[in-house]
Each structure stands twice: as C-alpha cells, then as structure tokens.
Amino acid sequence: MSLFSKVLALTALAGLLAGGAYVRAGRALGPSIDLHGPERYVGQTSVLDFSVDALEGTITSVEAVLQQGETRVPLFSLDAPGEARVEQETLGRIRIVRRFDRNVITGVTEGAAQLTVTAIRPTFYGLRQALTSLRHPLELRFEPPRLTVLSSQHYVNHGGAEMVVYRVTPTDVESGVLVDEQFYPGFPATSAGITGADDSRRVAFFALLHNQDLHAPMHVFARDPAGNETRVDLDHRTFPKNFRRRRITVGDDFIQRVVPAIAEQSDAARALLSNVPEDDLVTRYVRINTDLRQENAEYLLALAEKTEPRLLWQGPFRQLGNSQVESGFADHRTYLYDGREIDQQVHLGFDLAATANVAILASNHGVVIHADFLGIYGNCVVVDHGMGLQSLYAHLSSIGVQVGDAVAQGQEIGRSGMTGLAGGDHLHFTMLLHGRPVTPIEWWDPHWVEDRVARKIARANTP
Ligand SMILES: [Zn+2]
Image 1 (cartoon, helix red, strand yellow):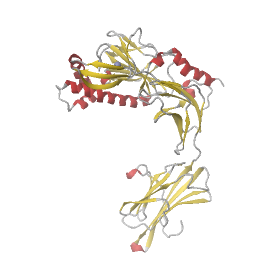
Image 2: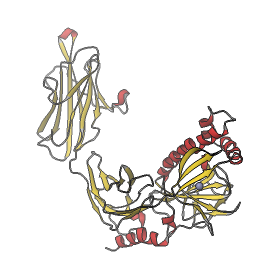
Image 3: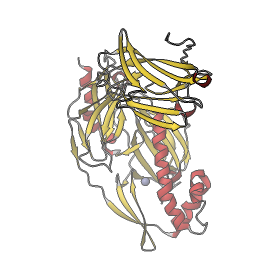
Image 4: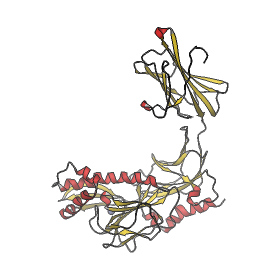
C-alpha cells in the first residue's frame, strides 16, 4: 500500500450499480473495480469475478489476493493470469473470472478472510500511476451441510404426497426434498407440532406428480449460503396409479355459455383471446382450455408462496357431504367438437356432484389465500393449510369468505355453481402441494393421514 506516493484506497458498498456489480471501488484518477462475486461466502464451488475499468487508459497492473491472518493467497496477477479467464469487455475494461474454491485456495481455514483487488493505470502521459484498491470481507465455508433422514417408510403414490422428517446442520441452510428437480422446502419440525425438537429438525411434504416418472430420483437436499450442497437418497417406494382416459364432447350450448362468461370476468382471458375473432368460439374455447388453464396453474404456483410456515390443519380432510365422485384425479381428457378432436388436457382435481347452491365447506382448518374469479375455475376459493398445502374449490356461484380469513374445518366458504369451465353444477376440488395438484383421495383418507403424517410426527415426538 505504500508503494506509491498518491495512494487512495476506497471500499464502497455500492448496492446494485449498473452491470449488476454490488461492490465498487474507484476514484477520479485510478481505475474502477467492480466485484461481481463472491458477495460474502466462499464455498466449494465459488468463482471470483470482477471487472476493472481503466477509464480511457490502459491498465498496467491488476492483482487479487486473499488474506487470512498472516496467510496471503495470490489469486490473480495480470502479468501471469494462469487459469483465470481475462475478457476484454469494452475498450479499457477487462473482466477477470477464475475458480475460487477450496482446491485453489490452500493454507487457509474456514472463517473470515479479506479479498484485496488492486489495479493501476498510468496518468499524466505515463509520468505517474494512479492506483485503486478494493478490500472486501469474505467468509470461507467449505464444509457441506449434514443431513440425516429421521423418518422411515416413505410410500409415495403416483400423483400423491408424502412427508419426511430429517435433521440438517448447520441450521442456516436451505433444505427440503428434491423429486427429480422439483424442490419442496422443509420447515422447522416444531411448526409441525413436533415438540422439544431442536432447530435442526425439519419436516417436508413432497409429491410425485402425475406427470413425473414413477422412478424419479428422490433426495433430501441442503445448500448453505456458500453454495455447498448435500444430497442424500430418500429411501422410498412408489406405487403406480391408473390415470383414466376420457373423451369429452363439447357442444355449442356449452361453448356459447362458458366462453363469453369467462372472457367477461377475466382480464387474463381477454388478453389471451384478443387476437381470436369473436365468432370463432371453438378456437376461443380451446385457447381458454389450454392457455388460460396454464396461466391459472402458474398463478397457483406463485400463490403457494404465501403459505404459512406451520401446520394449520388436523386429521383427515373432509369431502363434500354425500357427493358422488364424477371424475378421478389426473384423468387424461380428449375434447371432441363436432366429432373431431380439438384439445387434450389432464384434469387435475375431483369433480364432486352437487346440486346448485349447496353450501361448500372448508375441508380443514386454514387461511383463505384466494377468494375471487380465477379463469377456468370460475369463482374460486383457495385455503392454505400451512407448510405448502392448499385446498382449492372451484365453479362456485358465490364466495362467502375473503382473503386473510381464518376458516375452521366445516365452515361455509361459498355456494356451489357452474362458473368457469363447468358443464353443470358441481364442485371441482383439489389439493395443492406448493401450488402443484396432488390427489385429494389421500387427504380424505383417515388411514393415510394417520400413517403418512400423524404417526411420523408422533414418532418424532418420542425422544
Ligand atoms: Zn373439474
């Protein structure tokens, strides 16, 4: 630092500057340095990434060093870039990228360290040199999280859900279950009613979705803020289910009733239909059945992020009283109009027969997170039961609750109807896990709820 007569060192936390840089150092004469990463932690797979801008000059020197106590680890030198990639970003601006992990920084231990990047450019016709130095505190963290699965006998039906209890340390990591690449976050075990649990214990609900492979890999997964990851195989068995195939004929009466009604009530539908002629009702219908369905599914995914991080429900979920099941979960439906096939969809819920204006009751305790018209679902209520679980009630003639209302099992939340894509008065009901449909049959079944959830929680409660 004392090599030059006019040394100024600046370390500035500059937030989000242009170019995504979050740390920048620079002054009028010296080059500017933008550190793109790492921000705080150095882990097993970190990358050092920074840019140096000579400000209409040439850069004569760039050095990067990691310092921990007396130990200095050279990371980069413009004279000898080694394995680092040096890119000319613009005239006078270069970007340096290199591996920055345990294998390349030896002699240091886990804990605090400091990164120093120094850059020099000549000024005054090369008579003087201007220097900028950026100093950035880092935390070295190499040990990956540790995971232990505590529950046993994980039985997963195709299209259904399951629960796991596990332990993860340290506790400041994100963790959960990966089914293939689908992630289901874990929640503190105490939030599931597991008493006396230290904060390393977690509970996660997860699912094998109807459209996933029966042999999809299942892991318990954890990642710490330094990016270190751990995956352990989740011991489990899966069971195939027969998804039915049905052919559904849609008639003019149906299309003429539902298409204009949905377009009238849904901004999203109007946007999707804006380039389809008013009189082409069949195309408009298919657009609703396909694109609006997709958009509604994405809305439900985003909505699920509002889930309460604790279990709000208790015991089996309640099915609409005396209802006949009209349609199974994940029916593959082929839609026919005038004898020709116009669309195919998977029906992700149960249609429960009802007469008009029957009281629709909350299937379990929870909090209302949606109470409004929702595209193909018509008037729709979604109740959050916590830890990623929701129930959805569609095609209602009227809604009797508001977002934020706490509802008890059996409490009326609306009246049955045929709004949205409904051929007649019925309740379309489904369970959602983190916004993705899972079969409700399991949640209605007292034995399943006892075996898959309650017993595991009880077992985890015994020391
Ligand atoms: Zn339905």
